[in-house]
Amino acid sequence: MKKYISLFLTGILLAVSSCDGDFADINTDPNRAAGNVFDPNLILPTVSYNYGNMMTGYTGAILFQSMWVQVMASTSTGGANYYSNADKYVASGSTNSYIQSVWNDGFAAASRVYQMQSLAETKGFSNLVAVGEIWKVLTLSFVSDVYGDIPYSEALMAEAGITQPKYDSQSAAYMAMLSDLEGALSSINTSGDPIKNDVLYGGDLTKWKKLGYSKMLRMAMRLVDVDPSTAQSYVQKAVAGGVFASPADEAVLVSDQNNGYANSSANALNVTDDVYEVRWSEKLIDFLKSNDDPRLSIIAEVPPAGLAANRNGNVVGNSDPSVQIGLPNGFDLKGGAEDITNYAKYPGPTGTGGDVAPIGAYSRPTAIYRDRNAPVFILTYAEIQFLLADAAVRGFSVPGTASSYYTAGLQGAMTTIGKFGGRSVAPADALAFATANPLDTSSAAASLKMINEQIWATTGVLANFVESWNNWKRSGYPELNAVNYTGNFSSGQIPRRQVYPASESTTNPESLANAISNMGGDTWINSVWWDK
Image (cartoon, rainbow, N blue to C red; front, top):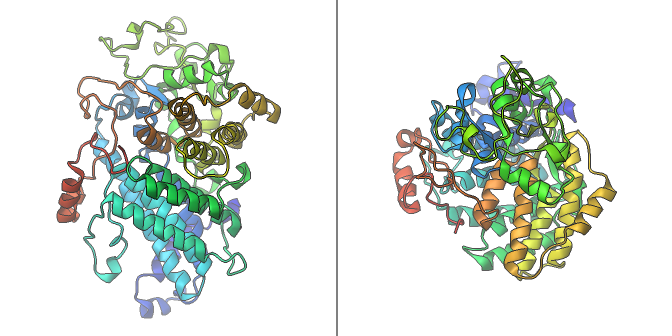
């Protein structure tokens, strides 16, 4: 599979040259491939990588959502002050750059999908067109969930002369995306043109259909509060079409450090300041410890004593579950009222003499999160099972019970954590954990709380921080206490969206103004359409 990732750059260069419309010029250059000879399958690995890169690392996920939703925490002091954006909702020097990353990367990724589809259409590669549509919906729904209203119906139409596309309301964009996804899935012919250079599923179109229907399910469940009838309709379509049936179906994208396509979150967490500053949150560690969750010893370690060991990601810490301590959100190391040493549960500094680590013996991510070849978890079987459990609790027509889906989700989550490449949870231990932690069915509220706390924990430990945040916005679980740090940009509330990039005010001002008016403002705390 990795050999195909090395084709990314080739795909980029050839795709750009083959889609600029000046075929006469291209055909005179023997080193550039014209559209009639270029295989659009070569662009597919680039499309895959672009999506994975958008949802990880400094693009935004670590610097915003990881700590907004209190999966991680940071004292964000000194060299890693950029984590103030996440932990304390306080702008750093590069906040404006971070704000626009998902927007720019998302539309650039969607543009690459459009190139691939355009070329595929000329060659009659209908399955590749359909797979491209799945990627387009994955990509632009991700952008919409982060910002709200976005260009969709007129997006990617620069060649047709639309350089200032209108912003569709998120409600209109969602309905169009769900319709586009449904159409693409119905057009896939498993006996038709093969998909090549597929780093996600190796050309298995049956699994692509399962991904598409699983994505449909997740999008449908976004709508449970704002449009429950549409939510139920698309949940039923997704189940009928066939969602993930086991962890073998889930969308887990390989990374390839040797060819320049490393896991972006791992790149970030290898920075020395990040090794020292980034810790698991008190909220997450307490949650995992309260349930004797077997994932705890896989994901968390307490570094050895001393500043040097705390700043060295190659030093192995203590993964004994009993010693894990989560860092509370909203503290610093500046010596004032919010200094972590003033926290009632502060465990004290570690080390002696000139080698003291004042941050204390808090749990940091283990080496699996610093592995640049670590996979990117796009959508997992566990998440789908938990969403089906949520749907069942709400009375949607699904074939199983909330309890059975919840149990399957727990076992799936235990299986999938092993795909990081570190230690795994043994099947017997996963079964024992699921058996010991059945769904509380005493009330709908109790069930929804357990289900959505597990979505938060599962997506969080798989480093899919944006999804942890999105599902928290949708469900309200887990219950979080906002940080109200001095100088924050969200009025002491957990941000519910990212503000639009400043560049849009010059490149597409009228459409931006209409979107801001429709959304009731452009702040960190006004909600997207489905977030009720």
